[in-house]
Length: 90
Image (cartoon, rainbow, N blue to C red; front, side):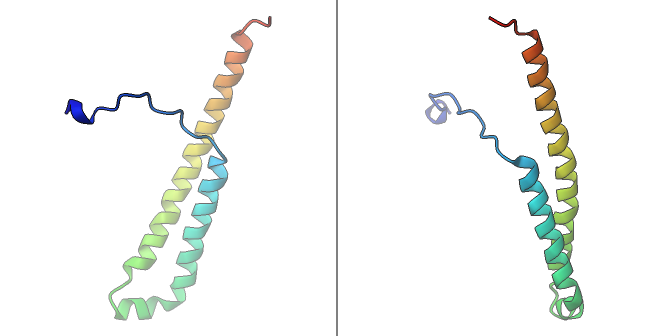
């Protein structure tokens, strides 16, 4: 097991427009669901209704993701503001 243990520190995580990315992905999932909905009969005949439900699940999980990343972003900003208030100015 020691052979596979990394010998360097992990890099810092990349931060970016996380909230916008999750919102965009959620919109894409819901649009895919709505586009496929008129073809429900065709999907049902071919046994592929799971495509619709996968898109709906992706949209639903995206809503949960939006809630999560907005709260995470707010917590990061609060922590930065608290750190800035406790650090004495030189």
